[in-house]
Length: 269
Image (tube, one colour):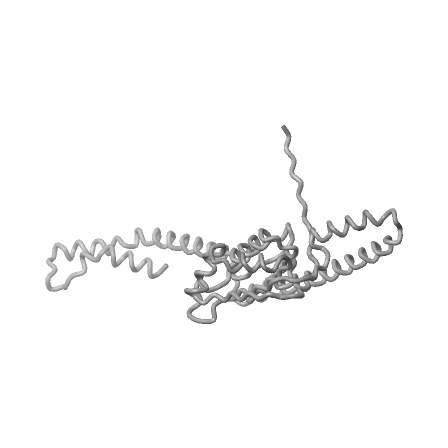
């Protein structure tokens, strides 16, 4: 407030501050008269300064508090992520145990001839839904980020790359598919959040191992056809994206262990 008051005084008389020897009597008397009149408006300026100071102080105390430790939010999110991942593992174990118990009860019913046909049909539907273990000949595909050159959008694996391969495999008659041991079913989601790929809401990282059971010759022909995966093979040739394809005579793909969320829509006509 004092500085503001002084600034007002200096600003008011900045045009009158001249060397004494160059000042005539008339201007000197005028300057002295103005200085003499200064106390008449000084209290007003003082009151304005006080009010302004009170307002600034009130505004200062009303400012919202901010986080002083930038590590705290990160640590909290990390702990939450780890807790959710542990909970997810526990839930998957419970799903697995429940599936084993269901299989045990179904096997107990096989002795009844009346239930044989129903159980046989049930096994077929379970296989289609991906909740049974599948074994047989197939193909393994490895996708990985480039090991040479700088890291760019063109040198890393994206969720869309995995989706393109999965769609091609289903179109090639695949019986079962998994990515890093995550079974792919009709309701599976393959998404990218920042630099993390989520499959069935499970966080996975490169390298990505895609196992597929089905007609080996047809699958190999479709995967190795560069016209089917033009962008992927272009980045492989130009940026070093890793694509390894191998024929496997005996693959084993575990059952789907996440939940099914079915949404039924309806419309009123």
